[in-house]
Length: 130
Image (cartoon, rainbow, N blue to C red; front, side):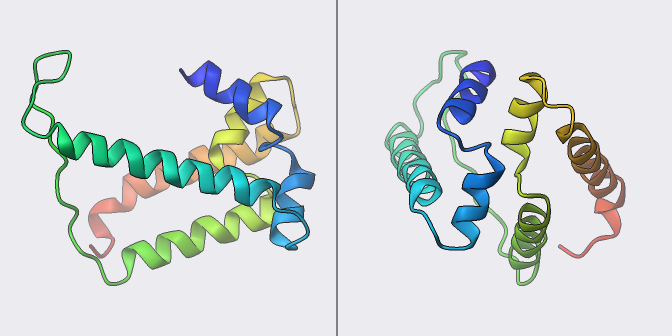
């Protein structure tokens, strides 16, 4: 599924730096259309999972959607940091992997930084506010 997702990202130009810049400069609807379709797809998927709540999945485990703990600052702060990184680099993590696997050498530095940031978060998670 990851290979198919990467193929779709490349073919839809969701991994294109120019398309992402057009989105941030409000010059094109292309990326907003892709993001909107992802939100709708996720919403429908979650609603279907809620309808199946209590039933067994393919592996026999019950289908449940755990409640998220409310947070005052963690979600807005995380979104702000993610958006800042996306705006500065011009890529989010999904297209970084797709571009690296399609042979783009320049994205390796950004991908290394993203992986280092994820590792750093995991290392410091115990000391961060919840």
